[in-house]
Length: 239
Image 1: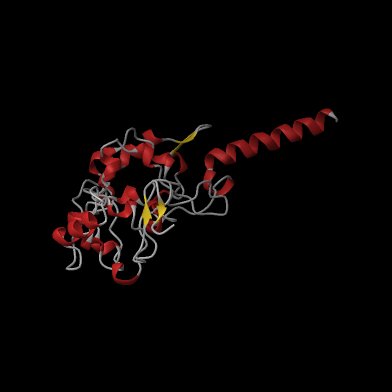
Image 2 (image 1 turned 120 degrees about the horizontal axis):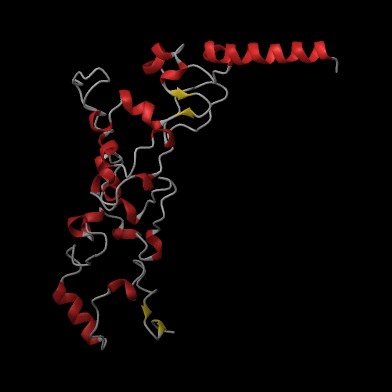
């Protein structure tokens, strides 16, 4: 390679480097910004530091964690405070880039909507409904709290709970959860929630069969099928 060609190549590289700093939104911009940051479209260094990219420190100069969801970036009260943002005050550390990627172009570097619950303080991870609205379907309308019994913090679906492992909700047992689980306590159940199962009747029938320990109903009864009673240590009744 001739000396002149090397000089031309070096000059081109210098020009490109200068242009990248002067017009970064044209030279290296990965896509348009979200509408809230549209005014910063030509001011890349408002969020990015040279050679190191966007930093949380630059985010928090405008978005103060203690004001997120309460005040605008200009310090004005939000007329309708957002109910989905208070968790920003309960983060273990401020790491805006762990969740936010404001460029929405073809080079988007992070999938939107992914939140790592490990960023939350331990007590906040237990309060799902402080951030998430409970689903409005017929099942969830009966439930308050206890989300972790069926769902994980990794993903909402699929749910991990299979009621058939404990008791099949067939025939007359396909009822509201509160019939068996009183006061939304899904760690316990009672079979005395309907007129067929009174304590006196249950006790009398079991004593007649020589059964004196009948507190844990589902240990023997796994469904409404009266011919499928599993006796502990003796297999199915009649076997």
